Image 1 (cartoon, rainbow, N blue to C red):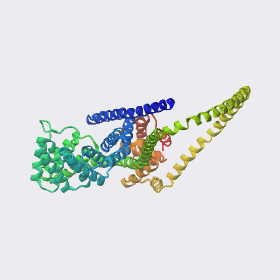
Image 2: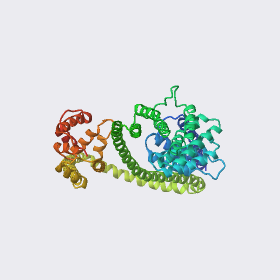
Image 3: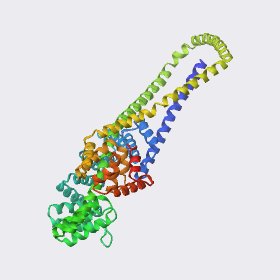
Image 4: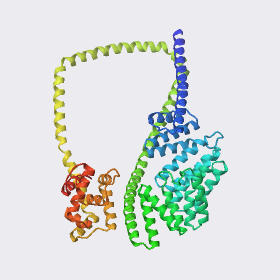
Length: 547
């Protein structure tokens, strides 16, 4: 009986230890979650994916609905900071599912942030209907959390989708109402920063008095301008808006001043494209054909660069859509794994409870078990003797086994060497297959036909060629379209034609230039891409290996 009581005391101590450990662990997990939330509020880059995932898993098993919401939101922010956009979306959706909006203590503030982050991701992916849907939910939960500033900010974010949809009336309404709402709560300078689009909208609708009114507010209160009226770097697109206002007012000198200012100070393709296009339009009005031709040509070049950049971004977005579906499946598997872990914990708890309940039965049968154990002990001793004999026998034949092992290892290396011989032919066949498919496309046949006739390729022809290269030679296209190499249009087109096995003489015909110029361009491309010297033949040889 004393032995039975002793066993129960040990069991009770173990159970108490498990429960105490669980309480301590939960407290530690809450402290870690608060620390990650502090880092997020400080706008630090979230890096510890393993910790964020472990916190989400822990609170799914042991936390309240609000703790689960917060943990999955932090997991989504961590994935987003690490560039794992599809997994970030999955984590934010998981966070929204954890929220219990039927209770009075629901963490609406965090729920508002979840939908705000989702809206931003959908905007970047051009999923504008989803963007607006998430912003509406973000606004709703911000007001439920009594966070007026967050609600107005989410409302203002709708401007992005409306601008892409070119919904002028909606842009004006959201822009001006955002300014009015911020002004009502004492932050007119914040609200004024959204008025640039209102100026543009009123200019398009020929309501120039309203455009002038909001232009003055924007420039006076936004804080974006210095004492000389220059806008801060990165916002030079506003000069296009202001130039269009003066163009609508028929103040052509002022319009020209701001279009030239955007052309001079705006460094990206969109600024250059818009400014040159506006100047060509203005000089058309003034009857200056030479200036029209100059800026129209530059606008065409910038438009081509913008198109190339947009095409590359479209490919990236398509890849992201594919990755999103893949990561959804991964997220579902992770959820299933967490459910299994939760089920294991529940089973373990039931086992411990069952052990305590059947303790008396164990004591009653203890004597009988002792007899059975004695018999089992004897049987194991006999089995041990047999095993020892087997071990001694095997050790006596150890040399023979070592020789057999060396023979098998030698055979394994021989087979691996023979199998490796098949790798190169397979890769050659795959490459040859891609090249054959490429040569059978209508676009490639068009190139050959025009090369034979000596015709120059049109812009429509080049759109088809670009689509062919993006579809069948993605790595090659990524290399030559990278901003890091800064290829000119002529260099880019020369490289594409040589990769498509067009002879240098035919390349000069298709581009409408001399063979000597093609040789010069090829040398420039070799230097930019591969840091070597050479001519068109050497460039053709190198790029033919790229797929």
